[in-house]
Image 1 (spheres, rainbow, N blue to C red):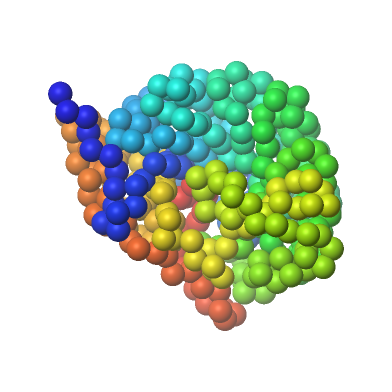
Image 2 (cartoon, rainbow, N blue to C red):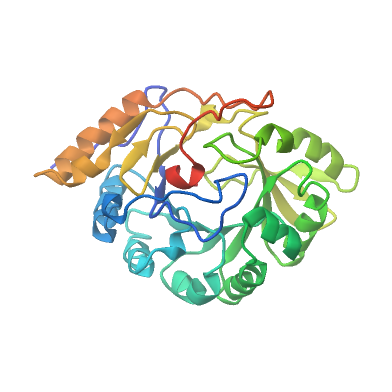
Length: 334
């Protein structure tokens, strides 16, 4: 029996990295990500954990070697650890790495289980270390729980990368200190430009901070040396001599990174988006619920490779502009 063909798109890019969302729900309401009164999906529309697991196995059979579990906030989903444990058993058996992105509000409860399942590293979204600012930005006073979760992750032996969205007028004065703190904790740090996904109450133009400007500011204080380190994602890394740590920059607006894209995203409802910045999608939920799920999934993945675009076209260039896409990041999965 011949093995299924690996996933290669029309631009000869080998797709080996799946970002799999398990829920669109989140226990925070970060102002740049979603409105306060966010409407989440009916639970019946979301794939079951068994469907998510079977789908992931289908991806692994087609050459996906890295899976990142995302949301929303993945740890708010009930019985989530069952999926983590099941997928963890595939590490070393077709899957090279299983990772997760979390806001860490519930990480203290789950860090040991995540590590025991075979997860080696996680990304934690954290935009400020100021409790009042955190509460204002996330609309929830949850910084103590996040810091407790980070300590639990460290004690569990998980490698942690702090992801920070650079926001003009909100946290730009804190970015240097936040990086220094992360490196002092033994964590990597990555800065991300704000992305124009979904309607929010505030105008993203007012808070858009190009990372080229941030890098110029950082280099007034530190020595940044380009690093060959890669994690399979879009970040480009630098070693910071003075802190001894590593800094990543993700620049979807100012320095397009699509030529080497190796990623696809699947929402909690089973919609495969071939590009974070596009509407090209394939319905995998219908495939998983068809009479022959494996054949239908393979056919759908073949279609996805044909529709994956060359690049996204994000821009935040004027006040009052509509978002590039109507769907929120929490819907797509980070």
